[in-house]
Each structure stands twice: as structure tokens, then as C-alpha cells.
Amino acid sequence: MSTITPALRARRLAGAAALSLPALVLGAAAASAHVTVTPDAAEAGSYATLTFKVPNESAEASTTAVQIDLPADTPFTSVSVEPVPGWTAEVTRAPLPEPVEVHGTTVTEAPASIEWTADDPDAGIAPGEFLRFSVSAGAVPEGVEEILLPATQTYSDGEVVAWDQAASGDAEPEHPAPVLQVVPATEDGGHDGHGAASSTTGSAGAGAGGQAAADDGGSTTLPLALGAAGLGLGLVGAVTGVVALARTRATAGSSGPEQR
Image (cartoon, rainbow, N blue to C red; front, side, top):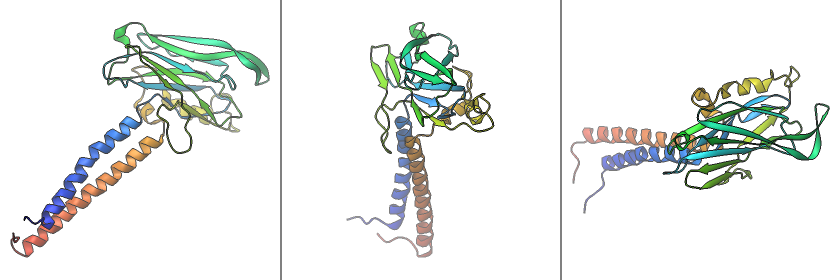
């Protein structure tokens, strides 16, 4: 019967730790592969540039349409879209369930949704790709802590995925909706678009192709945090295994050849 020596045990520990790193990275990526909005916070009363990042999760079909639903109880009074090559955008306005007061003005109608449609199949978001869609929206409603922005993703094979679930507690739902946190306006001017919200939205940038890579990290989500923590633990395990292997070899070298 063979005996597992300390050196062999150390090598196995180091190998297991190294193999765990790709799994941790892939797990974090899979958990975050949904429609998100950046920035994830804007100042009440400001006009914010919101960028929706839409990854394609299908292995065979392309994404051919994306729709974002806007709130009716705390509406944006103005929405404009940035052109995306190969896509047509349409903003739909609708009467509000009840009139609301916005900066002293009674509003009875507001933008209800934004839909982007690929002009042809080749313009769709192919498997393994993502696309960004940017809008300017305002004024950011006051008196709320967050705004849910449900998204609907349509694929070329007819599949429709609704990203419309609100998070409850620390657990993330299977199809979470993009969420914009609302922070109170500052005294130095959030209503004119030059307050804290402007510095937050500055990295949102432009639409497809020309946006800064900083957009990718604008949304801080629980899955990414957990994935990063797991990656750190995996690195610690790998280093520990290597150190143990080195110590075992040093001990074995000083005490002569191993007995079998």
C-alpha cells in the first residue's frame, strides 16, 4: 500500500488551489451576465446619462431588440437617446395614472419606455458579445431611494427574457432588473446637472463602440463582490500550497531520501 508523503500532499493541495481559480472567475462572470445600468446612482433633480449594458446569453441566437420600461409613478419628464449604428430607437410616451408635480409643473404624460431594434440580423448582438445603449434622462425623481428599470431582451429565435425582478435582501433574483439608486440633491446644485450626479455619470460616456471601459465597473453587485472574494481565497490557497511544498522539500533534503 502506497504512502502519501508530505511532499505529495503539498503538491496536491497546490494543484487543487490552482484549479479552483478558473472556476471562481467563471462563476463570478456568469452571475453578473445580465442587463445592467451605469452609473448605479444619480442625484435627485439632475439629468443623468444612463448606459444600459446588454450581454447576449444565448449560445446560438442574436439579440435583436431591447426595451427599457420607465417608471410611471415617479416619471422622467424628458428622455433622449444616443444613436447606435445599425439600431433604431423609439421612445414611447403615455398618460400617467395620476398627474404628478415636477418642479412646480403638473405633468400628465411622460416617457413610458425606450425600445431599440436591430435594423437587420447582422446588426444584432451575437453570441459572446454585448452592446451599450445610452440615454439622457431627467429630471431624476425626488422622494425615492431607487428606481427600477425593467428590461426586456428579444432574441432572433423568438426567445424573450424579462429582466424585471426586484432584489429582496442580500439574495439576487434570477432575472434582476437594472436599478438606479437616487441620492439627495446637494446644496451646490444637483438640479442644474453639475452636482454629484454629474461626476457619477461622467464615465457613462457614449453609446456603442465609443464608450470608456470604466462603464464596465460602474455597477457594484453582490455576485461580483462574492466572486472577487472567492478569487482572493483561491490565491491564498495557491500560495499556501506552494509554500508548504517548498518547506517539505527543504525538510526532506535535510533528512535524506524519503523511505518508501
